[in-house]
Length: 484
Image (cartoon, rainbow, N blue to C red):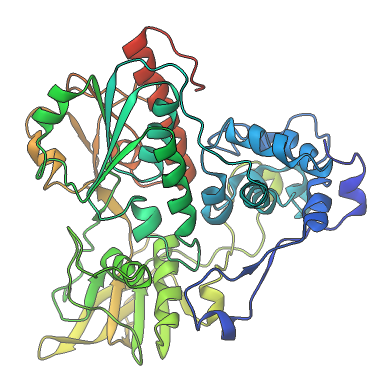
């Protein structure tokens, strides 16, 4: 794969970033693209490793054929590379930007801490394909006469809609917001992925016959009973958007917010949309000139950090209840799986103060307004250590500790008592369906993505959307040629 001795001759390189002092002044992407020859050299590092864990179950959820398209890029065959990549992934320009790249963790060269720059090559293939005009609508040549509705236009819904449209079905995609994309558009900041990439895919899908119904809140504006009656199949891809309850005293203070309303607001500003949004508070939340505390250690928390810096925050502190992980993992113990080790996101590298093994005890304030966050150190069982309490000044605090399921005021409310839900010990509520048929307890209703599996990665949503599309096509037609 690639150049046989490439991994011995070529050092790992990935795209460099604009300096933090420059990139925090705007909301655009800040990765400096590599030249085609540089990308080809990185693809050439893909070795003939025998068992490529990168695209197995430990690496890529959609099973991208990574060694194959690395070889194609190395040999300057960009058209065949994007064709190969599209055979498993509808939207490589999304995953090439926002995926944490478990494929690189599973790369054999990661045993030497120098994995192939798979994510960089993937993004380059997609961007090059657009540049050369290789990405065009692929409308079905034969139409089945079957109507399918997809609820939710996030990565699962978009992937499923595209697959079903190409299979010849009449597909109607319903989106609550004014534009398609789900949390790809309204949750992920523009500095990680600009939204013109979503717009281009929407235009491609329209050219393939998919009809978009934006600004339609299914369960409220259109009843589920009507949707099920009008279509042979309905696929629910509503995502996981209800914030997990923190249970921290003082959460009612002015200045304390869940993370997602903050991120959605800023994305709507960048997109020149009104900040009012269904399901989220509409009062402006701005970090300029303020001290910010972010509770949580995941990607959403990191997105809050980067957004706050770009809005002009004076100081941003991030609290993580987990202990500080080691700088380097024990390869023989964890490879090829995702390792727990010290990772610093681009947003954290912009100047965040990170506190590890710290619990948030209380939000404190005066006259109903937040002034600080009371914290303490915790032991290895996450129990507070007496005498270690301290207060961090805070004008705004964002809670980013995850999501427990879809919004309950639309589809779930409309199907109350008919749809089987799974509630775990943390209070998560997901729609029950297996990962083969994706069929729910309601006739003609399927489900996929975060609404089924719980909060997860964009790449997992794409996988589930593709697999659900195959299951629906097979159920409607008795057979299917769509890949699993």
